[in-house]
Every structure is written in structure tokens, then in C-alpha cells.
Amino acid sequence: MKPRHAFRRMWGWPIALGVLTTFGLISALFSDGGVGDMLAWFALGIPVAVCAWYGWRRT
Image (cartoon, rainbow, N blue to C red):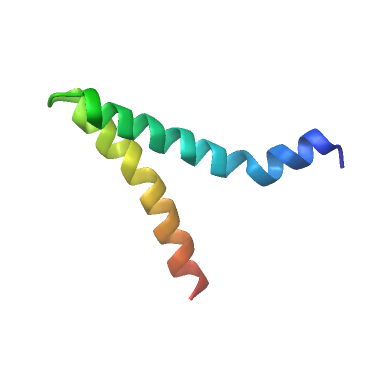
């Protein structure tokens, strides 16, 4: 396996969830209601849902 492919396979989803969380936090910080709050809600809810899914799946 190529080193670049191995890096992307191992760290791709955690980096994507981190970027999505950062986007949600910045959107929540600078929005003042409306679409910005909805974007923040979805962007912060998706990583929580993914963590909950994998947490419940293990038990």
C-alpha cells in the first residue's frame, strides 16, 4: 500500500469530521439566526451523530 493512500485511509474521516466541526463552530459564532444557525446545527450535529452511532454499535 502506498504511504499516501495509507494516510488518507487512516486519517481521512477524522480530518473531515474535524473540518466539519470547525465550520460549525465558526458558523455558530458569526451567525445571527436564520440559515447560519441551521448550518451550524447540522455541521455540529453530524459529528455527534457519527460518534453516537459508533459508540452504540460497539456495545
